[in-house]
Image (cartoon, rainbow, N blue to C red; front, side, top):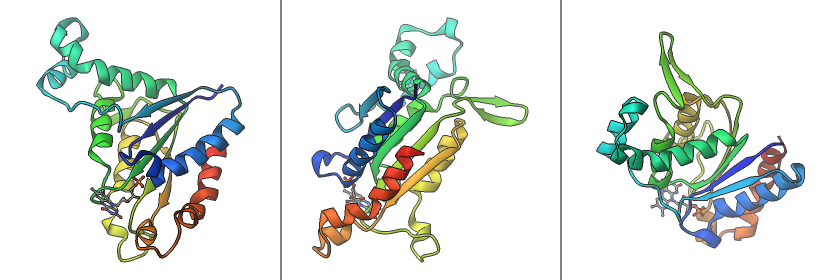
Amino acid sequence: MASLLNIDVSPRRAHSFSRQLGKTFLESWTAAHAGSPVVELDLANDQPTYVDTQWIAGAFSKPEDLTDAHKSALKLSNEYIAQIQAADHILITTPMYNFQVPAVLKAWIDHVVRIGVTVNYTDKGPVGQLQGKKVTVIVASAGAYEKGSPSENYNLLTPYVKHIFGFIGITDVTFVEAGGASAVQYGKITAEAYLQQYKQQVTDAAKA
Ligand SMILES: Cc1cc2nc3c(=O)[nH]c(=O)nc-3n(C[C@H](O)[C@H](O)[C@H](O)COP(=O)(O)O)c2cc1C
């Protein structure tokens, strides 16, 4: 039975375009995977802590050397890693902020990428430990960053997210780049018309 980990990021909650497209994904995914579990992680409601000195010391200590302070600092990291390990498919809905992922999503990434846990360094270089999983990332942005366009290079989000999941072993990453939200803001199109442009891509990703 497949399982889905749904991570939402936008603080705009009900107004968020990325979350609304995520709902479309969930409807299709649950229809295609009847009875399969969905775990929800809302990073706007439950914001991750940041990596600190206890976290770093704990992450690079042997299990038998961990102090209570190390264990406490690594608790959230262990929980996030357990969630991702248990999932077959990870759905992330996120805004683009300053051409990158929002800080809460970066903080989640910093907890999930752990040497010796989700990535091992070997003689042949880093080997990601979370293989055989699928990630779908729905990104809402004011601008559009189409391939081949002059603005393509401004998009640092999708190359980074693809890279970081590959680093921990997940190479099956699909993006739905919902660009052009500024047209809604400027009253050029309705929110529904903007969202409609991406619903087929979202549905296809849910059924893949
Ligand atoms: C702090 C901040 C930074 C933003 N940076 C960018 C950006 O770099 N590029 C862009 O196209 N849109 C940017 N936007 C616009 C958002 O990506 C856009 O409003 C999107 O719809 C937000 O996603 P949401 O609707 O799921 O909340 C930014 C918005 C905020 C609030």
